[in-house]
Amino acid sequence: MALKHTKTSAKSDGADSTQVQPSDWNAEHVADAGGVQMAVASTDPAPSAGFANVYTKAIGGYTGLKWVGSNGVDKLAQTHLGQDKVAWGTAIGNATTVIAWTGIVAPTYLGTATARNWASTNLVTRTRRIAYVSSSTAGSLAGAYWTVAQFSLGVPGTPNVGGFLCVIRFAVSDAAAVSGARMFVGMSSSTSAATNVEPSTLTNSVGVAAISTSSNLQIVYGGSAAQTAIDLGSNFPANSLSADLYELALYANPGANNTVGYKVTRLNTGHVAEGTLTAATPGTQLPANATALCMRAWRCNNATALAVGLDLVSFYIQTDD
Image (tube, rainbow, N blue to C red; front, side, top):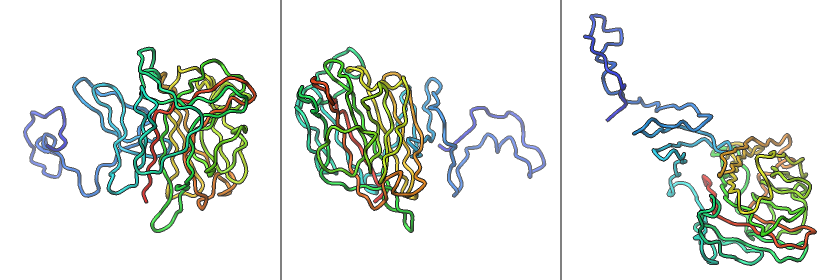
């Protein structure tokens, strides 16, 4: 069945065939060869009872087809696995079994793998995840990093190449408040284990972070020069204890060599922070498109002699080539 109006006309057609007739209104409508163009929605439109809504929306700058069903949860349509390169890993929960990876080499882990059992307490505890916990020695780290970098910002041309859509879900799970803790989740050129540095000083990186001087999450980024961190505000606490589930989306358009879109969602509250990072000089404010990047996620106790924990839920990255 094609598209059709929910209301039908009871009028008879008139004599002027150049006008839209009631029968034209009542007929099923078929899209022409130009396709159906949808405006990009700014919010996720809730469907009426018994219906689902299909629409387009930008995710960190990536415009994709989405839908909202009867459960009220919005979903992004999956790209064709035979046409795009897709890689992901997702934790099984209730075990120390490492995340199973598809389409990408497995990362190296920091800290001790720790089972996180399902519990009904909140969204974090209901989520299947695995924790990596540092030692209590000051300067200790926990998390995951890749030793192979395979992604880059876009390379405009015919065709456009490079670029990526990266989505990571995680939660902070320190057993107790750790003063001055640091954290980075995102993309970086580094293929070595993280060290105890302020994330806002990182170069050739883009992601979300906890810095030692703020209790709010920050967007940190830089190419050859680290840029000023963007404070996401009090709706994005950086050091809550197994209370906040976060999703980071990063999008580097294959047709642009100087932009990365970001979207940070606090899934348990619905708070969203999003924007676009633009390099006035490609390679300076953001990594050059000849610089290979990889995913990484780490947390550090900095100078406090208490363990930190980082719960890893899922990693996803897709490219057009």
